[in-house]
Length: 176
Image (cartoon, rainbow, N blue to C red):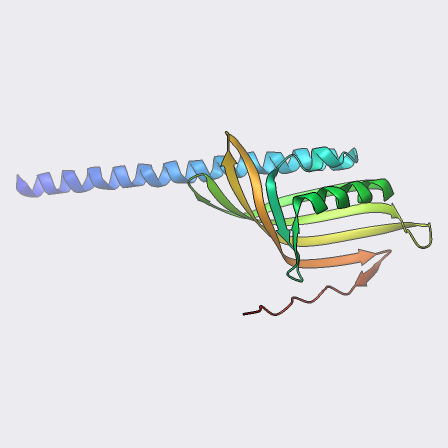
């Protein structure tokens, strides 16, 4: 009788642990689907050259760290985005989440971005085709029921202009 009770208790414990594992996986899958849908909205805004729509997922205190280690804050990002949109003839963005780690209302997302654009070269005034491939790590937070990016960091980058690869900036050594 005691042996049977232990087996039953053990089975129940495994079922409970398994259901928590499933719930966590479902939560992660749901968050991944939600964030991927946000990236799709950003891509749609990019195709329309809608700078504001491209930034809907950024928290007001958002900042990004470039490959070189420079931290860029939201006011500069808004200005840069407006300037780029003035020169862009066409813009196509694809963002694919390759990994998502969820901890409560925070998610770390590794994503691969591909940007294809045609823009006017400011020096030559001629059109140029630019392809940018990046891998980024983004820190997302759920705020007021919405998922927003708090920060992102470029992990790798490849730039091609008119079929010629541009050297990638070098990471700066950490100070301190």
